[in-house]
Length: 226
Image 1 (cartoon, rainbow, N blue to C red):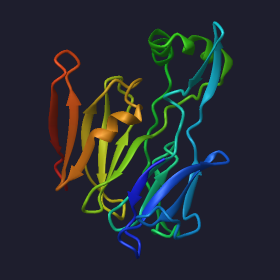
Image 2 (image 1 turned 135 degrees about the vertical axis):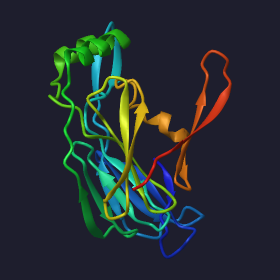
Image 3 (image 1 turned 60 degrees about the horizontal axis):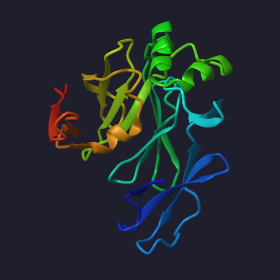
C-alpha cells in the first residue's frame, strides 16, 4: 500500500493503493483519510507462490516473473506497465486512459546461471524451481519512475549479469538518454532498494549504506539528455 500526491483537483488529496480480490485498487483520499472518489485505477498484485520445506512454508517470488509497475507524476498522471514488455500506459489522475508508450526491446533469456544462482542464494528456490513453471525470458522492465519535469526514468533489464540500464523518456515517450546501472541481476529486482532514490533537476540521488562500516552515502547520477 502507498500514498502518493496525484495532483488532482484537490492538491491535498492522496491516492491510496489497497489490496482487493487479488488486485491493488487506488482511491483518492483527503488529508483526513476520507475517500473522495470511486476507484481510479487498479492493477494485479505481485505474483507469489508457496513452497513447503522442512515443515515451513515459504512465500516466494521469482525475480524473472513480470510485475505491475506504477508511478504517479506531480501533475497527477498515472504511469503503469506490466513490465513484461516495454509498454507503458498513461492515465489521468481520475483514471481516464490517455495514451500508451511503446519501445521495441530485446528481452534477456532466463539462463541456467540464473537458476543455479537462485538455488545458491535461497535454499527454498531449489524445490520451487522443480514445482513451478519458469518463464523463458526476463521481463523488459524493472522499475518505473517519474521526475519533477514529467520525464520517465525506466530501468530496463539487460542481458548482462552485472548491470541494468536506465532509459530516460520525455512524457510522450521519446528517448532522451540511457545510462548503465550496476546491479546483480538476481538481486536487482528487490523493490525496497529503490525507496532510497530521488530524481530531481535531471539527476538521480541514491542513498546507500556501506555494509561493513554502516556509513551512509548519497550517490548522484546524471544522464546526458539528447
